[in-house]
Image 1: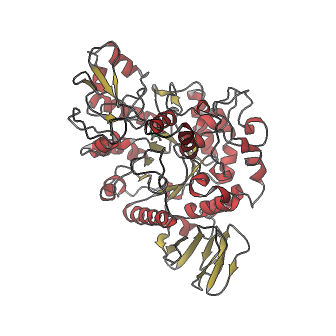
Image 2: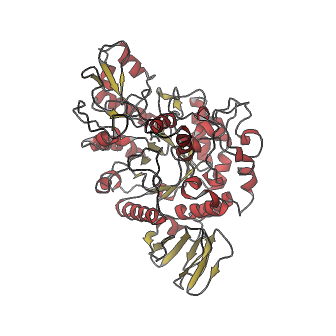
Image 3: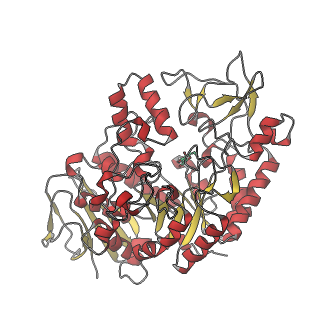
Length: 562
Ligand code: GLC
């Protein structure tokens, strides 16, 4: 039976619950806040929410450290609020995706507490414990957040446990069948509530090599070696993922999007017709500013040609194999305007240009909260203003690698995950209308008086107004929706390096997207069949029969029909 792939027509909006809307004045967002804002999301055109974790958690890693999969953390509300959120969202035509974090739990999960309290408990094997070697950790892996991936067990002479992320996020042992059953039960319990599906966290890390006593040549100042190289996408992982898919996701026709940067030759296994997930995130153009090793205190100088090449490559392979998603921002990324556009050129025009470029690509668009109003990175006063655990680890590594404190601090402004985690900017009142608390959990960006929902809501020329128009192009009653959703992506090569151009093609209906990714005007040839302007970030555009003059950072969508 061919199932309805409803997610292809979806507009997804990611909510970071700590920062969306506070209703009980504790300076932290909550589920009731999300319920209150559902009309806003519906008006924007959103049909799916991806909610970053709101399960019970000590919040060592912003909720990606879960201590009880069956509870909502009290800072966010209760399970009754969650049920109400799912039901009310449905009334607004919105489905909910939860974040599924099953590579690790919190060290406060009862399984882990039992494992520590009693080495003979069955829970010991739910995690990855190993004896040390020569008085040291079993191997020299560096965790994703920095420092050894092994933590010494307190009160035991020579015992360590593995954590790919923070030491408070012990990795689960997926070799243990009973543990896997418990996870399957939990996933189905959530699906029974009527979820639309899951965003699946850090999933390629599940399978670890058999021999955990092998060290590797160090690739950093700290004498350690990057863990990702050793544990990502190990042979055998697909068996477990197929089981999850067959026993959970497919049964409910759930949408699954995995955080899995899969190599081209393995992509079919993941997102092909018989793949384990419905789709997966691509990292190539969102991590374009990072060095290959992922150390984000360093940056990679990229070019528009490189960005174009990444987009083309990703789009062509995703549409060939299965279905892609596109995104500019998420809770791990800085704000897109800061990443892609030089400081002097950051304005509404460039924000709209980025929106055009990404929203018109093939695949389901994911918008991260605040992106639709053009929120920007935050200048913190000093390191104490940051909350994110990875920011602290990265700052320390920068110092260890010889950067000065001010260089390292500057790198945090560019790349810290807290840049996108600041409170949502609703209006120009205190804390941007996010909270009436004296202090919010993370500072509100001081630019909220200029950048907020209220000031843009009724203005079609605002960034928000522009996003609404882009979303509108994907709605069923729009004349262009079949092409924006199902049209093939076809790159168009122009000689101008800073012109990114592509078509979306469905039979004889075509859209042409032209993006001048530079601060200089350019003139280019134009196929005269593209007579109709669908959307332009600068108006009016100078369209002639066979050529077009694009202003700096102009982006325009043209059509051969209307
Ligand atoms: C994913 C999440 C990130 C989290 C990590 C560990 O990469 O997106 O926020 O820190 O997994 O769970």
